[in-house]
Image 1: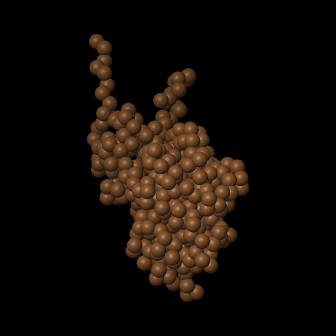
Image 2: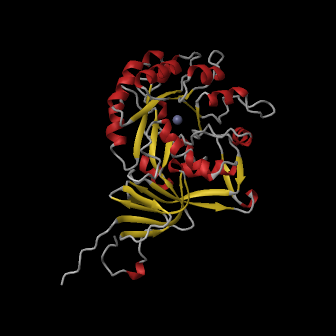
Image 3: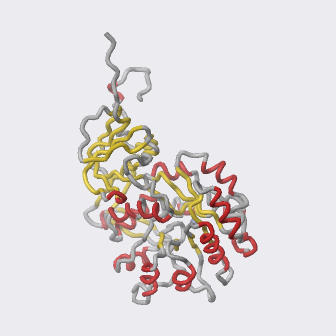
Length: 402
Ligand SMILES: [Zn+2]
């Protein structure tokens, strides 16, 4: 008699991990089951199962795949040719399943971004469209004539599956032209604006975040040197709390220049942590600062942010900010983007882990978060320890293991 067909209820089961899924208020030991590329169940103990593959992730944290709200994968040419990273090579080993390219493309050249970057990789790539028509491909970001709010907004609406907001950046003229044009486009398209703008004598930082940005707009790089919101005694300026209260989103945007321990440490000690955690990943921040999501999160953990909060600021909150609450979650039915992390703890910072910031400084910390596994749409794309693989000693000679 032929054997009865095996019915598999799930394709993959992550068993015994500690789930942190802020979008669903989950924080505890749970199993996660995946079927057909989607989350099929999350529960204390999913009993049997008929899962094709069961992976023991005990002693590890299981979270939604992280969302990096500010990174760079498009924008070669001009002065920015060194910026571009390969989204998969950057994101997949780092538990990051969604990246947001922050302003590489403008409405005149976004086609290449969609063809080559969005459709070219397994990482989910979204974008903030630059208010400058040419994005970061040239130096036009300094030229108000290249700011075209209506064309920018129209392009976003026509490509709403890709573009989730607007970027204004690198504007070195003294006025508010770039910020205001971006906000104008944001009003038309109904999307948030991310601002990266050095203050000037005319363009005052408090006015940018209290008057020009709207609630829901994002100031990236807020732990950078150019925003003097710490007093001489290191007190956080009252206008920062005011801006937070009115709904401005403060994003890390680590990068090569924008995460300074000596600003972040006293701010976090006073309760001024980030709303969203992002890396500003580009080739200039990849080696010295190692500004990936797990390393950026590790630095924040060492400065006093809890792991639960850090995961919240890397999943649920960025998803909400870009109005994509279908991602950054382990909700049943969501695309199965999942990360597995290990948290190493040292007895003291001095015997722990060294980190480099964007201000040329180092910090000893007592925590280090590292990625053990990344799953994108149900597929295991990264598995540092081979947790999902059979031991070679039990296998026959010449058949590749599934
Ligand atoms: Zn950037």
